[in-house]
Length: 307
Image (cartoon, rainbow, N blue to C red; front, side):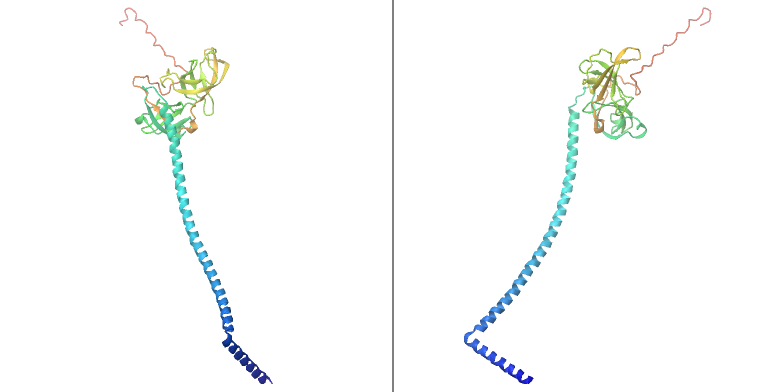
């Protein structure tokens, strides 16, 4: 039974094939249908491959572009770092130029030539207890002990100790600092004394009725031979009455603040003392005078003593 059905199916299939073949030979519709189906199938595959190729190509180009972008980014970062360093150096040079221009515009007496020096350090070595700075000049380059030290703002202090190429300057604010000054308007004389770091300066030996006002500028008087006359030193901040000197005379209690910002000090001027000026002692103190002891007279020789 089964073989007959198989034979019958084969015969029907052959007849169907012959019929379709005969119909296709007459009309050509089957060829066109198969060609269209084949083309559609092939076109779909090719479009898929094209899309896959485009995708892979895009991924590759994106990867290559990303590598290029990363490389360019690294190069730009390096250039930015170099430019930032140059900008920082330019800012520092610009700030130094401004300070130096201010120094050059500050006029000094022609008899006191100025020599520039740099601040190297603050409060170092055995002088750390004092308000001092270390300078880049020594006694071989114009920084002998007692040399006045100034900036474009005014008086900084004076050289305390000096080596061949470096020196230590005592600042105006130190308790051992004394400067002979006078007021810019009333021309009242006094001695400006340092009180230590963070403590106002004190103007001493000013009589009770002296014409001094708050905000008045104090300049060097030149009477102590340590500084030339007329350099700005400080500004009066407070005035009170009721003080008394050692002699018992009534004096004003006057406080002042220095004009120099010592925390931002980087360059200074060393004023060279004229050859014909009086050189003060290195440990001069203006608030105390040592009396000069007169030599006692020898008694006259008695007659007949053989002298």
